[in-house]
Amino acid sequence: MKDVKEERFIVSVKVGPKGQITVPVEARKMFDIKVGDTLMVLGDRERGIALIKDTEFYKLMR
Image (cartoon, rainbow, N blue to C red):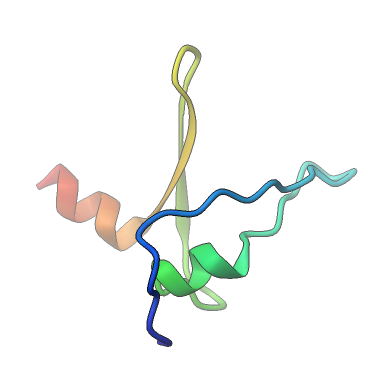
């Protein structure tokens, strides 16, 4: 993984016709997301949507 110098970023993405989004390269680098990784989608009506790698999610749930 390349060095990620910033701790935060903001990027907009568009939802495609099939409801898909592209995970921005900044996020893929920062969180070491690779092809084939599984992401969990967490949703809360008031707070919005969050993505987390499944491996990190399961660590939090222990």
